[in-house]
Length: 179
Image 1: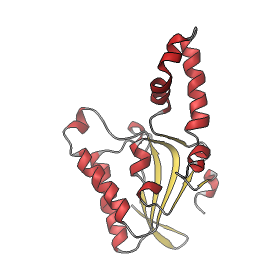
Image 2: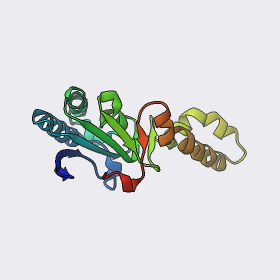
Image 3: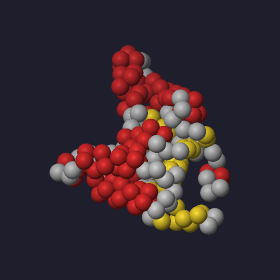
Image 4: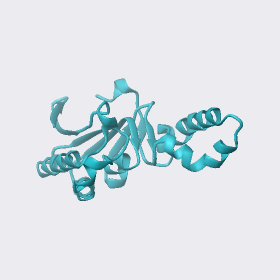
């Protein structure tokens, strides 16, 4: 949609994480790409608020041209010359972070909230993929999985880690995001 912050008109790309984890759907990607292109045509800055567990999967997404729309979304972000600001408000897993308002696709500045989780996979999937043998060998596999999951979230999926590797510019408090 379109909003006004301090007298500046901006395009807002956001999702509702309370609905299916905020996954990026075919229709959502199409709408976002159109909005970004529209904003770029009139030099309207784009603010992207990210809280998503990834891209839609399953039977509903299977018949849709999801890959094509994700490509158009990536192209819209990458080719837009207007100002682009990203804010990771919650979760940003895999394609949700890469395709939506990321520095990789030309965002001018990207912030993250202190409790944001930024990871190539969900922390649960990452721990299972990286440490399956270690979890299996543990006397208490549930406790080992929980320990590794907490460690992954605090070390690998943290906004501080994303800032250290250049994926985001800064960690900002929720109260500071409007400014």
